[in-house]
Length: 114
Image 1 (cartoon, rainbow, N blue to C red):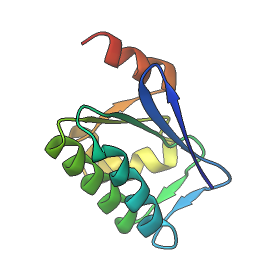
Image 2: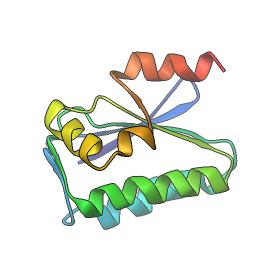
Image 3: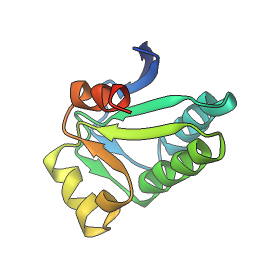
Image 4: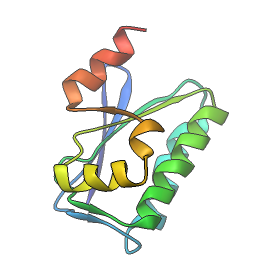
């Protein structure tokens, strides 16, 4: 369901065969993502490619992970948001809250440019 890999010193999380990020999976995902920040200065990219729908619990996970990242002096970025899901980000104005990139390559490069 969820794959975590390291690329260029960043954790990259992707979902396999998940089109809905909802209450059925959010507790497990939240726990795993937050645990990645057990050390300081962690860089995490959440690749939402293929996820077409996100409910309120899903957005709650993103906000929780962002808070955990900040507390541990880490970084959290999101990429690959599908058009349907981006509409929800924009309605909730969360596109102004998170660092969002079109694709994984651009997101990875954003860490190198700091």
